Image (cartoon, rainbow, N blue to C red; front, side):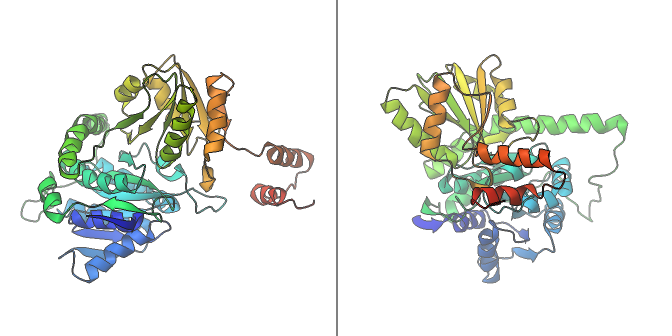
Length: 411
C-alpha cells in the first residue's frame, strides 16, 4: 500500500510486518518516533505477543536484545549517536555471538560539542564491530532494507544495522509503498535460530576462548561477513519479486561514459544525482556510485562500477581525525592506481547543496580538487581560531569561539 508517511513511522510499519517478538529500546533523537510507534502497536496488541521493554539505557537495550535473541526470539531495537557508542561493548558481543539482531541507526553526529543533526559519525565509529551495515538513500529504501535485514540476519546468523539519515529521512514525509503482511510472511519465514539457550538441551554460548582457538573463531566471523556479499543479491531478488524494487550492494547512476565518479552513502545521493543530471546535460562526464552495503565492503562490485573512471571523488559524511576519509580507504583499495579524492561534507547536519557540489565537481574534472577537501569550510574562521590559540594559552573553548566568530561578535 502506497501512502504519504513519515520515515520513522514507515520503518516502524516495516519492522512490525517482520513480526518481532522482543523490542527493547531506549529513546534518543532522532530514532524516538520509530520505537514510539512500535510501542503503540505492542500496547494495542497489534503485534501479538511481542514484548516491548523500556530499557534503562542503550547498553541495557542491546543487552536485552542479546538475551532475547539467544533464547530464540526475533529481536529488534533502534538507536543513534551517543546511544550507539554506549552500546559499543554489547555490539561486539552480539556480533561475536553470531546473533541475528536487527537495529535501526538514525544517523546523528557525535559530540563534543553537542550536535543532534545528521552525519555518519556514529555508525562509522562501529564499522569494525562485526555488524553488517546497510545505508538507505531514501525512506522507501529504508523500508525495503529492514525487510531484507531480518532475512539476511537470520539466514547467516549475523546482526544487521540499517542506517538512515537522522531527521533528513526519519522526520521527512514521503510517498512510501509498504507490502502486505502475507507477502512479508512469504519472504520472511518464522525465526529458526542456529543456536539457542534451552534448559532442555543445555549449552554455553559465549564461553571463554583462549589463544588456542580465538584466531579461528574470529576468522569464521570474517567468513560469515563475506557471505553477505554472495547472499544479499539473491535475497534482494526475492524481495524484488514481492516489491518490484531492486536493492543491491552498490547502485551506479550515469556511470557509463563518466570519467569522474562520486561515491557516497545515504540521503546525499539524491542531491548528487540531481547535480550530475544537470552537469551531464552541460556535457560534463560525471556519474554517481551509491554504496548500500558498507560492511562488508563490496570491493569487487565497486571496482567493476568504477572501471571506466579516471578519477574518483568520495563524499564522506564522517572522517577519521588526523587521517581523513573512512570510505575513501576502502574505495582506494578497490581501485588502486585510480586518482581518488576525499571530500568531507555535511558534518553535523550542514546542508550539502547542489551549488557546492557543482563547484566541487568542476574542480574535480579540471584536476583542481585537493586530495582532502572540507566542503564549504569557513577558512577565515578557522584561521582566526588557530591564531587565537597560538597567541594565548587561555584561548577559550574552540566550539564557542567559532560560533561567536561566525555570528560576527567582537573580541
